[in-house]
Image (cartoon, rainbow, N blue to C red; front, side, top):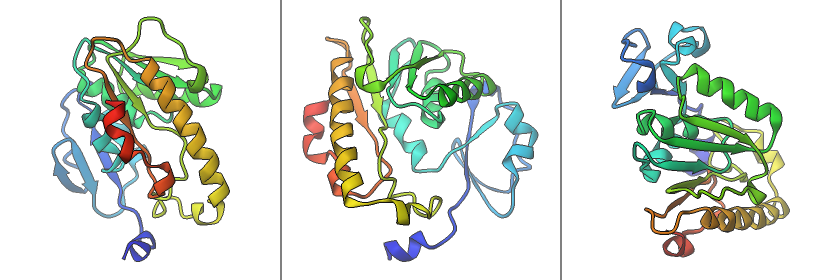
Length: 220
């Protein structure tokens, strides 16, 4: 059933962005579920005026579940350790009502600059983008909450990225698991002592080697 589902077209979902005000999006075809619009039929998101105004972000429903799990609060200091392209980063900022600080780390300069443009478009003014390697990132002030959304095999996204069928391999997954462990250790070290101490690990894959369920209690 999973393989059959992966051969179906991916749905298009939008996250409505409260940081851009409350202008209606009634002309977007589909159904509204809270801050999510599941698009029905053909829709050119980039041509819609709401895109340029930052009224919505194209983001899958699964991806939209991650930032609420972090549960960032207004005024807190939150870290998104592997931030680009920024769907979860800007969601964190929105859940904080633009208050506090979200530090978004991205090692690739081009992707970091694109993330800055995305934050500007969606009015996420409390996001500070840092171009740095997440594995060695340092910050003496520490963070109340940390999101780790590391590089992964992406095997849970085959509907929207069918080419991954031909690019994933057992050897690649082994390398990714080592990198993911290193990023988790760095994230844990960046949590503030005495704070909420919330660390969320999120990957878009079904590869058991890349999951960390057995250690979940250790990381919180």
